[in-house]
Image 1: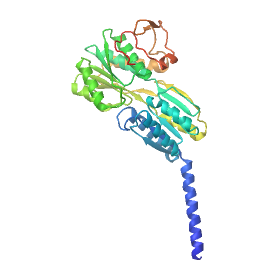
Image 2 (image 1 turned 90 degrees about the vertical axis):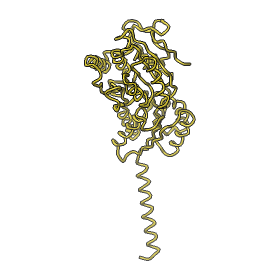
Image 3 (image 1 turned 180 degrees about the horizontal axis):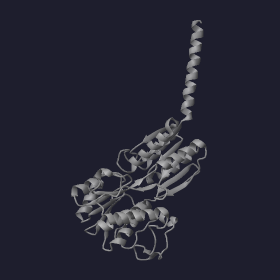
Image 4 (image 1 turned 60 degrees about the vertical axis):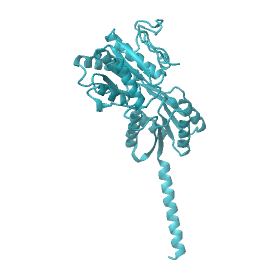
Length: 360
């Protein structure tokens, strides 16, 4: 074989190899995740990341996962989404409420890319939304908090005044008040999802006000550390178990289990069956889990909390069941009446008894 033939054969082999590599690359489903905080924040973003890794393990070499962490809500997120779409990502999960409008904008520019937005309410033919009924877990936390507080003062670190957060505060308060009529709630608005310094300051401020229970709808473990330093304050994990602080001060937690949803939606892209949906699941379907109730909780209180969990899961109890009034005393739900999903999805008021204000 002469030199020219050798070169031709080598070129053909290289071409075949390149074609095979390209075909292999194209056969993979490329999935992107945009996180509002660090992937190791110990809370919300980490649990999305961990769930993405469970999904990746499930599919093995059939998927390629791209993760962009600590992306601010707003213009920065729109830029990151655009870059992901341009890079060939076929399915993009945007995992924070403030990504909603940027996701809508980018989805309109890339009609052949699928988008999934967490906790929002706007959809499009190539845009779905998914969220969890966190308020179900807040009901259980409220019950435990109302039973365990000695000062009758419970603090709540709130992130942003959006329905998801307002629902959680209401649910926790309703169920604390049911078991302890003397309970009072103090709410501090942090206006951040993840800022350990701000979260720690908020926790310390609540503790200085006499709160011996601190709940949070922010993502870091800083409130847990502040409570641990105080020595006599209980807390609850947010979005992930935060079990490093168990059995005290963290006595239980709300855990977000996104992995089954991620597997289902990636599979739909692979199968060509993906359609735009709105998913809002809770304890029953397993999207919301209750972390282990620690030994710091009395046995009878634990049993009551678990009974409530079972009742919510099987549908025999709904956390927003009347009689309930709005904060101004006007009627909301009559005796035995259950709030419908439409009202809950846009909830913008506190229930009667809460003295905190919702920022405009």
